[in-house]
Length: 338
Image (cartoon, rainbow, N blue to C red; front, side, top):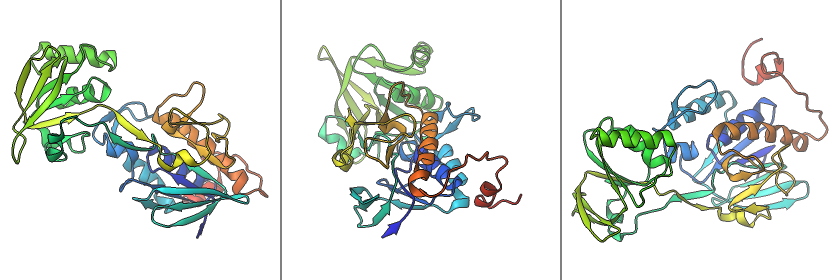
């Protein structure tokens, strides 16, 4: 059984930065994630999509942000348990006993849930025939945008993800945008850009249409889309992308006795602690008055949760705030000379 100061559930940006903050103040921690890779939603859903709200970083992709956070952790040699789900969390005196789907056991006073939206999977197209083209020519996320260069791509959806990828991929691909409504849910500036691309003839726009069929034997050849009035259009396309949001599944977290509201966990704003002492929630999965679902907000939440963990992990020591620019202790933890 692993005895540690804190266990982090979730290896996305918020979980990674929280681990960094724990190690900076001298606490040991490990990370469990049910994905097979580090990076959470940034890697699973938008590794190539530009991110603009990271302080002092004008623009970076989800993959670049993840790699930078991993590099920031290198001095600490954090242990990751990937492709594992936390199945059991129960109280053991002043600690929490945690068991994973692979049978690994942890004893810790602090559990930090940084699981984004929990276990997630994309909402998929209705026609069953789509399944045979999944991860070949039909996708619900973009992992390598280079495969679309010079090809015809049909994108379904009306939210930010769909519209952002229309704008990005239209630079090197022929784009069809299909949406079931006339109105879009994306940012106004992006919607304006979509209308501009349509006027310039750089994209084709089909509103009030939905996918009715996919055609092809081994490879996708074309799709049929059906208008609300019953009219059917056949579109030749090399790839199909669907952006309909995620089906959020909290999984075992729902059974841990936490205050859960609409698949998010209520926390205080001092420690980001839940209603269970020693269990914290940070990132998209937590909620509180004024909550903003931004990566930078998750960084703030993780930093405060890490400091709260110190009190339970080192009850006989007094935590002293240390400026990272002047602390000799922090320099030693980072492996740097004074």
